[in-house]
Image (cartoon, rainbow, N blue to C red; front, top):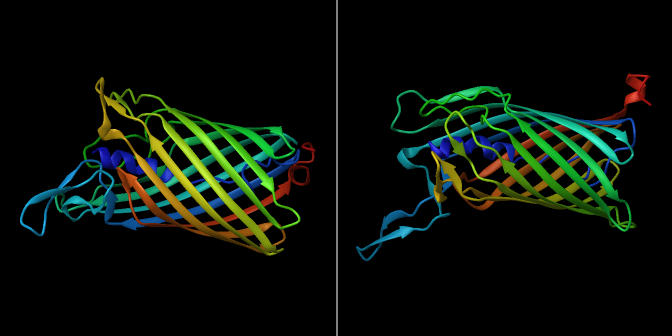
Length: 303
């Protein structure tokens, strides 16, 4: 059950970059993106030592964090749709929202019916405030996850919502490498995760890191290499603090973007897990379509 509850978290790690991290939008500018995420895997990074018979006939153990097949021939299948948007309220202050839709299942030999769930998940809202513009862009991003998705406490079922509030504090730093058509960006964040009162479970706070280097060698082409990491502390269930709820994951994601028309970009990324604990392993595929426009052209009152 711990693994199943952690699967939703694995999806919401998926990063949301507003053009390039620390950069804020001009006043009245709107940026929107729709992304499709997919992963199918039969492996995970184990959360407890797993016994193994060694070649010499003695017993040993796979250590915590070893990449191993799911027990009982398990397979995790996940698809998600992320709809998000930001608007520049001023040249240094943005507001944003993200709406996810999940469709996921986890099957193994212990169940005749495959537990699955689909539906709109927890809503996330954001604000971004630029503190510095030179010698680098420095931004503080605040976020909140509102438990709007349906949380069903049923053995084996993967809920589309997590049933509790989260609050993010993220410091973003970015710098253009002009005259090279390139940039670097890094986000360091701390996520406060409140208790799910329905199941008396505190999932544990999390540290987040996203770092990327990107370039636009042609006006129609962008390239980026992204590193993403999540590390949680101990969680608590029924008043007992336990290391079994610790979650760790890191990804390396080469990304390519192509301008398909004017300000419309098509982006594709292959996220590869590098290591973790209590998380699905393997490749994830993300395809996104983004665009930006001036709000005044759509709503004349917003200029």
